[in-house]
Length: 122
Image 1 (cartoon, rainbow, N blue to C red):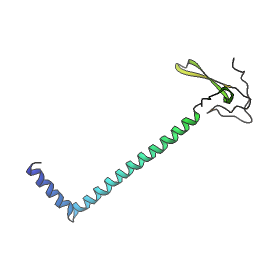
Image 2 (cartoon, helix red, strand yellow):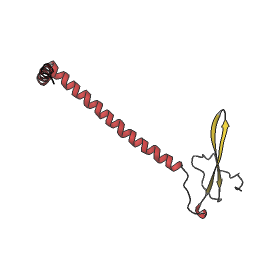
Image 3 (tube, rainbow, N blue to C red):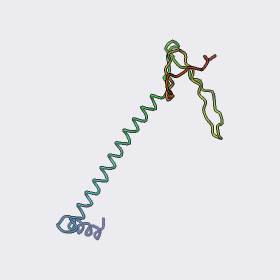
Image 4 (cartoon, rainbow, N blue to C red):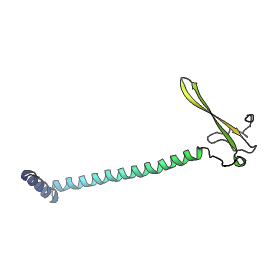
């Protein structure tokens, strides 16, 4: 640093370090700065927590691959894409393999019991 800048920084330090209006400005700056840092840290913590919750929910909705045919309860079949209102939509067929198979993830059951109306897969 050059001489004039160092002198200006020394003057500024003496002004902020003493009593008077500069001292109050210094404390207001410290309070404002620590508030901003604390708010940023809290926002990052909340973001991390809610991202973990979102990921956990996505994992529960994802189908689980069965390692043997006897333990499988649903058959997922990816049937390609269809155009629906000028948008490409992925068609997934879900077939129950057992009479007591659970509802597929994300499927809401209306009033009463859900009816199994679909034929068995070929």
